[in-house]
Amino acid sequence: MQIEASKNECDVPFGDLYGPVSQELGLVRDRLVVELHSDDPQIDAMCGHVSRYQGKLLRPAVLLLSGKACGGLVDDHISFGVIIELLHLATLIHDDVLDQAKLRRRSMTANELWGNESSVLLGDYLLSKAFDLCNRTGHLKINRTISEVAQTICRGELLQCMNRGRWDLDEKRYLEIIHMKTGCLYQMCCRIGGELGGGSATEIEALEGYGRLIGQGFQMIDDLLDIVGRERQTGKTLGSDLAQAKPTLPTIHFYRQADETLRGCLINLIHKNKNDEILALLKGQGSLEYSQKCADEFIRQAKEKLETLKATLARQALAQVADYIVRRSC
Figure 1: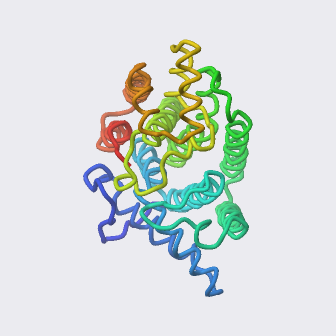
Figure 2: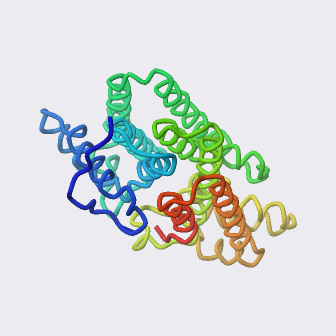
């Protein structure tokens, strides 16, 4: 059954970017309001607060654009767009607990307002909402994929926690972890969108490759912004990776290039929370530039994957999404 899109424009940034699916993305946003509502006023207040974390709805947009690039959108594209965003919101809440973050989307985090216990339970609540909505769609194969990806995300987070302080972590292992944390979710969005849109095996394979690459590129930029970004622009707590001793690409590159003296200097500065001096040290070793170039290369490869698809406005928008990911400041 084909969707009858809302006549109202979707209130998202980069309207031209989402143009081919802006109306359908509006339906996703409207449905999220319904799914996040609770009859209990206290829980409803918490859900209303975290609904501000939605931001650009980038993942549902990628799902919708993938469907449009393969042919067209159906009602279930909206449902799975909502499911993906609920899953994403849950991971953000849990991430803020792990990182002891105080700010998200220029608002206080759930853990800052209600404490870690309530925040973990709130994240679990949103996960249960997502899986309940999965069951209502009746797509057993897709639902199984979502369950597997949810497990993969948790494995990625676990591995990142277990590798705290491992400044000698190699780049290959880092890429595996960020794929599990972030890349697999974007890859799944593209796969679900393409499958529901009637895409061929070749088209879906290309979309999955695109999703995996933009997801890893997204996380590389996220890790870079955690070091060089400004909280006023990003709207969230920064410096948490260093504070939590999580090795990311800039520190991995630095550790690989630097001598023992400089390595010791970096670790000492991290322990003392001397972020400005850390920034100068990483810049001097070319580690920040290296990280940006790696992200740029992943995005270039992602756009190359799109060449398999028919030349449409949706394909063009997917390429623009990839460009946005590496030039964003928040």
